[in-house]
Length: 185
Length: 158
Image (cartoon, rainbow over the protein chains, first blue to last red):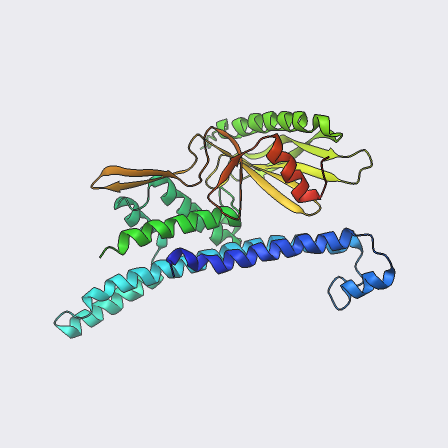
């Protein structure tokens, strides 16, 4: 499996959700042959007893929430990819002698990668020409936007907004670039 | 100390939105649909609040209603975004400069490969990013715009 594929299940679930919301909205707008038919269709769902416009509004609210969750999920997967990719590379120091020292050094390294700032890592990739300035900037802005969704800190409101499609494109492009640069044999 | 805000990007976005709305009005002219322009206010972190035009497209029976709503000049990886919203959902178009966002690969400090974040950016303009294949961008024209109207509203052009 290519590393870019890591994002695919999230992306495809989102697409399916979006398509399902289209089908739901068509069903809400449809002129039913009989009230029984309509009742059968919506029976046992959250839509029952809603007016058509209330139901449509709740679908819209869900889409907005899912889009935010989608960005969080895509970014979390990307973040895990970067951390694991760097930790795997760092394992090279593990077998060195004296073992007691390198084991401790590795633990410190592993901890620092796990807790460190990804902005710094993006800059490493930029300085090594793995990604260009524009992609590096897009990654940093995406992280800022992700933080805004997660914490809604009014003091850290991002300058620029984004959406799941843009985030998916930026993160999958970055994974492609990083993968081909760090996995040189 | 007074903060100096660069309003150039905002003004350019408003100008581009107005041109886009004019084009959209032309594109639906022979379809029997009716267009109307109204004013809304956008609030963005940098320039703050500012007015901008939005477009509404309806049919005579008012069965469909499609709103073309400017979102903002400050969007990641583009120079502005406009959403086309109908009862079925929304599609977004973004303004991309020639070549679009670019990824430069270098080997030994020499440029090895220049590739766009999106394929298909042949000129500066409004693009629809097809979301299934992600990297493919389509310059917005009449055909694509009418297809987007159908996507968000189920309205069938005959």
